[in-house]
View 1 (cartoon, rainbow, N blue to C red):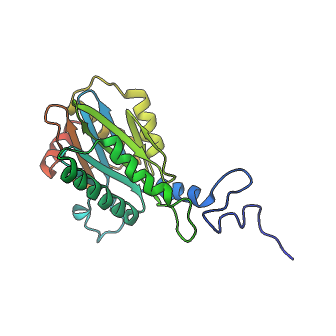
View 2 (cartoon, rainbow, N blue to C red):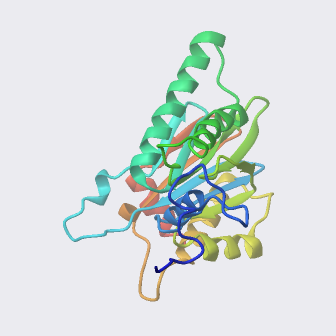
Length: 242
């Protein structure tokens, strides 16, 4: 009787640990994130910037209608890499929680708490039979009370961590290297946006260029405390500065 590799069997159910302490289904979810479009976030003293890449997978794909950066509440936004369907469900959940918090407490939700609520759902789907982990990582950023910029990233496992700058998806490793060499905390909001776009540009292959229709940019500055998305014209203007 033939036997499969040692890993065979341990990935048949989410509730079974392998001998080395891994949950293979969760590891597979991390791989789904690595295959997603490059997404990144940057936090400086001036505010928070989220940037998502939109690749034209086929000639007939209308990338202008694809949304990659989402507004969760007036003060906080989100982007993701991985399975878009999973990301959509979690974003709808986050918006619902932010709305409920406003209705009950009459104040904007704390960004750390909102991230925890989303991460709790992700963690729950790593410990029950008959379900699979969410194959998506979310970057959540905005301005908290006291004009405090916040940037956090949630993993498929349910773990979440605060960051100064973070990049996920296909170009995550290259963009992270760029941040490690060029990040400064004292940048103004315009320079923070440029830093994020340059980090995304560093992930491109030779001959490729960023276009206004291939990126989406959202930001929140401490002066207004509001999260908003840049228009096509604003993206075109800032790309000319590269």
